Image (tube, rainbow, N blue to C red):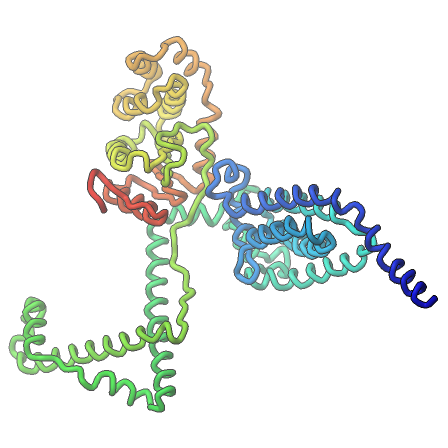
Length: 505
């Protein structure tokens, strides 16, 4: 009798669980589909600067939000891992999907709040929030609603305090004194509702700003290197039961400088040392002492560097890189394969003397790198050149007939860019005069040229020629050597051995 009761109790415990998951097979596919959608949004967010159509959806705002991180791992990567986990759990443990979805909802609420506060309307953040809402709806379990709501609240509160701290966001400062907030959002100043971005400042200051950053980096690294050496020597001395002076004496005791080394130094620096001719014996002794100190320092540094791996030395000072920009290239004339490892975007003006002079260098660069380059041309006629805008339209009209690059060569060399000459040049290249004239006279590409100008201004570009090499801006006309060096470095980063003008570099 008691055994039957126990059996009935066991059955009563099992039955609700089995009945609660009758719709599990029905939910597996929707959960998987939504998770994969979220995974796609996460990757688009992380790589939007390298995907043309994704970059055109969102530029500065998305770049600002993509830099946000938790435990120094970007949020887009956390999102990708979350959606991968949700996709896996869709078939094995759907109750866990509901739990992690509510936790993610708390985090997403913080990110949306920060996006609103920083005034950075990120398309991918909004899309991710929408996907998460759908995932919550699909995985929702009525019997766990209060527990899961509590979990979401806990994650919201925890991340609300930690994320701004880790990312140096002053979200709790007064709104009317939020200078740091605006700087973190990429805005340097506002004028009549129009934003002037820090990115634009970086591009305009160009090489000068980069040189200053490089100098600061070098100073930091030199000082850091000495601190690392001092710390290793101190640890080694304690490990060996010696004083620091005893350790250094043991490393440098055998260091000697011969007379031959002194003579060699004096021969190499004889011009600088001529003023000391009257005190030569004393000078020799001073040089010998200086060379000995130099050798001792090298011996000590070499010893410390040899022990870096033993002490797990890791350097986190970031090397400065030029600012990266995202340019919308939709519809722009392009030369070279779409999958070329390096993309160069040229902003130019057909009436600009510097652009005309640098066009020969451009032709040499394109010939030197061949199919390793995809060359994009963006029209940027300046206001100071009255004929340049119509010439820019003419170039796009030539593109209609597949003659853009040949026609462009003529635009850079002709002395007169008046409309009759533009039409005559098209006929000379075998284009349909009627089609070309109709295109030019109707201002078919006026809006496209204006958009190209806006793209340049938005990227902080204010002069021609300017070249954007894999997102890095180079203002002015770089020399052939500069082009080869920069493009060669980009190729090396992608694991491609660059060959320039028939020679291996």
